[in-house]
Every structure is written in C-alpha cells, then in structure tokens.
Image 1 (cartoon, chains in turn green, orange):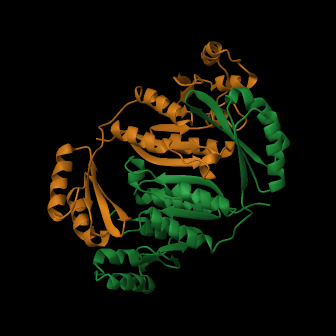
Image 2 (cartoon, each protein chain N blue to C red):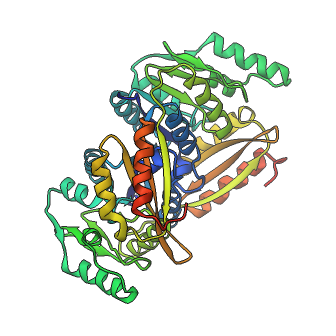
Image 3 (cartoon, one colour):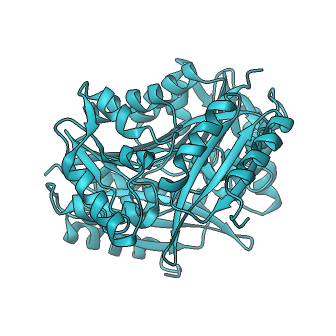
Length: 243
Length: 243
C-alpha cells in the first residue's frame, strides 16, 4: 500500500530573516499524517519570483500534492499568484467569481474594493478557488498545487477545505516510548528491532533535559497490529523506562 | 555590497510527520540576519539517503554556506554523515580525534564507547570538526556545508561556533510599524514607498487578531539612514497607527 505524497512550500522573507517563526508546516504535517498523506519535503523560499517558480515546478513534478503558504495578499510583496501562473505557463487575470466574493465581504463591512484589493481576485487560468471563511480573499488550486494564505488561521481553514477534496491513504499510526538512557546505550538493540520490522519506521529522537540524556522512540506504520507488536518488544528491551 | 548567502537543510522524519516542531530554522535565521549572512532557502527532508544527498548537492552549489541539522547521533536512523560523504564523493570512517573526544567524555561519566557510539566518530574525509560542548559528539564542516546536531541546545552551540569562523556581511537592519488597517487600505501607498526605496526590502505581514485586521510593515536594509528615512515616511503615511 502506497500513500499519496505531498510537499509544502512556505513563501516569505519574514521566515528566512527570523522575524516570524513559521507554524504552518507543523500544522500541515499533523493534518497530512492523520489523513494518510506522506509529507516528504518542505521548502522555504523568499518573496522572489524566480525562486518561487523554480520551487513550484520541482515540487509539483515530484509529489502528488503541493501546499503553499504566503504571498497572496494585496500588497506589492504578494507575488505568489503571478509566480504560480508563470510556473504553470498560464495567464492570470481578475476573475469575476473571485471579485464577487471580495465585493460581498467588503460591502458587508462598508469597505471599498480598492485597486490593491482587486489584486486578490487575480487567479491563474484554469484554477479552482479555495474558500477563505476568515477574510474572503480566496486561495486556489491549479494542477496539484494548492495555494493558501500565510496567516495561520486562514491557512488552517484552507488546508481543511482542500483535504476534503483529495485522495487520502491509510493514516499513519504511531506510538512512543520514552527511554531515559543515552542513545549510545540503546542504539544496537534498536537497530535489531528496526531490522525485524522493515514495514515500520522506527525513529529515535534524543533529548537532554535537566542533565538527563534520553530518547523518545517512535514506532510508525500503517499496520496497527505490527506497531503494537513492535512496541511490546520495545518495552521488553527497555523495561526500566518511563512513559 | 553583496552579503554572503546561506541555506539550511533540516533532516528528520519527525518534523515531516508533525511529531516535532522544528525550532532550529528560526534560531539560525535570527543568527544569520544578525551576522549579515542572507538566508535564502530552507529545506526539510526525511531520513532518506537519496533525499539528503540530492538536497546537499543542490544547496551547496547554490549558496555560500549550508547548515544542516539532525541525523548525526548513534542510532540506525542517523544517516546524515554517510549521506554528506556521498554527496561530496569522499570516503568516511572513524577518525581518531573524534574518537578521542568521545572517549574522554564517556570516561568522565563512566560510560562505554559502544559500537553504536563509535558511529558518531565517523567523519567524512577532509572535514573539520565542530565542537559540541553539551554531549561531545562533534559536528563537522566539509566544503561549505556545516553538519550540526538536531537537538536544539547542541545545534545552537554548534552554529555559534561555526559563525565565529566564516565571513560575515553587513548586518541587516530592520524597523517595524504596526498598522491597524486592513492591507487592502494601505497597499497602494506602500507600493509607492517601496518603489522610492529600491535598496530596501519593505514587507507587509498581515494579522487578524480579535477581529482586528492589520499588518506589520517591516523595513529592512543595510543602510541605516535609508531605513530611518523610509520609516519616517511610513509613519507620516499612516499617522493614526499604533506601534
């Protein structure tokens, strides 16, 4: 059984300058795992057309689904929609349905559809809109690329909406054992366990907290029975551990 | 004046599964900005040799400096050192100086240099070691690639140590104005400001908090006088804003 694959592209100078800490990757990763879609790669690029075009093309060609965040607002540094159109070699223009959505939202607030806001109705030819329940300006899907807003609440709503429309796989199950021993002490039996369960992914994530060296051992897989069996073996290998 | 460029490669299934939220990118981004090195791209890949090799080669060829985090411990899923050796087409083996560092640390704690721990002394040919003041097992630099641990405290210590050895540029200066108006209202004057200051990067980062739509306008550049001048114009454009 092979799950669909996905990649994420985070677009924004503010992440690479250290001004903002991205939280969208972590949200998307959790959602995809729960839906049985394997997130294989993520990239962060700056607000630079060539960088966005090149990343979109590379990820779109390599994975089943691509999610982007950021750069679809009304300001001069919002260049994602144009870059995506360029990546797919299609035109881009203001679209009536997107404009109508903006107008309805703005009318209700007594705000104007400025020339700047109209930029948010620019949609690449052939794309379908992604609903934005927070601030109306839609995202869009073109080919296998889902273009979402960067503001976390809006990103999360858009991802939820996209996930209702795409093919899922079997959700990845996982169980964790916390072992308060340095990794160097547990590595050999752990490698043996990993070799006996080639259908599972067994990861060791070291920590060092208050002078205690230890590791969280995470057993992941699509076969719940195998995950449980491996966990029982694991617990027997390290009986003194604390959960 | 052109600053050196950098990229980051985060290695680890746990980030892509949503189990762990990466914090190393945010730390590195802030440090590089303060040191005048422009972080241009970041990638996250899974514990997969082909994916690591391909990302190392792409980033190493495109940027002046590359920092990696993760995958250099003693367990079976720690494959970064071997992948980096493969990316550079050099051999890799246990090195005496790295082994001596491990031995001294373990002796002091009454622990054994197990076969598993000895893996952490495997260093690609031609690399120089990066000091690990927390748990001894060194990182290494080969070519323009700095291979660091994934545990945040160790990653941070290794980055600090590497930054003392590489060429810096002029630090990027930035000032922020918080504007409590929707981006659609400020986009046009903002685009005008950006056009008048082509040597600066002017970013607009929207927020939506407790029903208030607004944006943080960030003015960035290497020329402090230009940054201040643009900020004064910005404050005059939006006089009612709160800082």
